[in-house]
Each structure stands twice: as C-alpha cells, then as structure tokens.
Image (cartoon, rainbow, N blue to C red):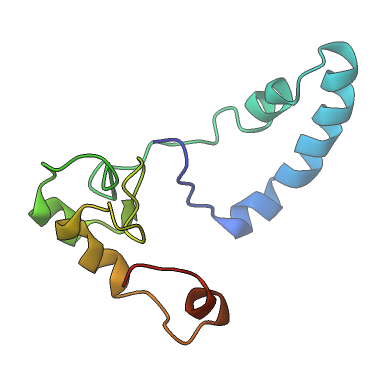
Length: 115
C-alpha cells in the first residue's frame, strides 16, 4: 500500500527534502513535463518499506482478514467500497473505526454517518 507514509520530520528538514523537491520540480517539469520524476529523484534512497504488521489494508472489501493482525496493527486501511461509515461496510470491522469516531464533531453530527 503506497498511501501510508511515516516521516521523520527532523531528518526531512536536515536533508532539505522540500527544497530539493521544489527545485527538481522546476527543473524537471520544464524538460520532462512530469513532477513524478522530481518525486522519484527527491526520495531516491530515502524510502523504506514498512513491516507488513504495521498496517492492515482491505477492511473495505476483504471479509477474511485475520482479526489478530487487525488488533496488533498500528494502521487500519479501509480501502475498497465497503467503508465502515456506510451501511454496506463489513460489520466485523466497523467497531475498530467507531471507537475513534468523535460524535461531538460538527461535521460528523451533520453527516449521515452509520453509527
């Protein structure tokens, strides 16, 4: 899953990642027309794969996930169409999301969130 990033902000600043990225965006997009190349060059040798136990994905489409893995994971990713806030969300995974739901939040109270 490429959507999870854990960033060491001290190291980010020490390596001047933002400055490097924006410099490369200006240089590369003029020549190549793609900001993707600037990203790849900026983060070259700076990205490491997280241990798969850190994150569990599939909670929005996979009925067969290991509950033990879910309870030990640091991050749960509800990718797929069956989001926990929808009626069609997978019931056995909804409780993990609901325990972090802030019922006092203005936006949550105004939305049709399946509680």
